[in-house]
Length: 254
Image 1 (cartoon, rainbow, N blue to C red):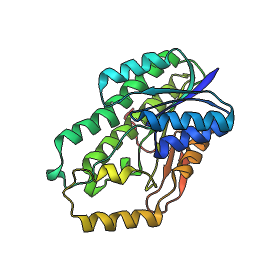
Image 2 (cartoon, rainbow, N blue to C red; image 1 turned 180 degrees about the vertical axis):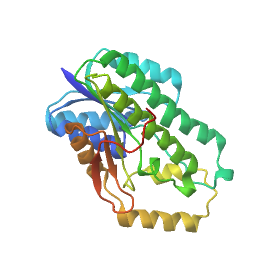
Image 3 (cartoon, rainbow, N blue to C red; image 1 turned 90 degrees about the vertical axis):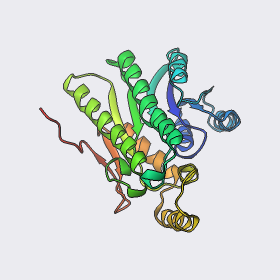
């Protein structure tokens, strides 16, 4: 029995991806911090789609939990790992809460890196995939979210670099990037937590996002397109708001 594993699956894009793949008949492994939300999702998906859903409760911003979680999922035949867990920070750089920034780095970068490398080691020559969720601001700098943007630039370059290296090695495993732009989710709520940007500016920003935002369900559909394709990058262009599949973005030194 094969599984799709989705981190950060309690809400937003992660929940939508888990739901879309379940609808397509895939068994699902989901992980996040909020037990009740995951249990509700499990019950809903199993009832609707007659598939198997396995739940793990971990805060993956804690390195010890990342390794515990990976040991848990090693027991299963995982065909796709979606590293979706992450959050943002919108603030003036000098006003950033360092505790929040460090936790963001632990989740957006360290947890994703560890899970990616561990999964590749165990599945190098298997028919398996990784989709790492970056962001459009992992390609275009967000002035009010520089630390978040930088964390997603890491995800973009790390993932594309590994993907292209693996192709040269003729490895079977495929590693890909999903890069959303503005999306209807809980992202802004958490991103503005502890922000010193004034409330009026925050509300204006939220209104702008609402005008162009894709739904989480849109992103789940894009993730499935990327999964089925032979391309490396699936990005929502933040200027045109259109989704496009690409093979490369960055130049390699060779």
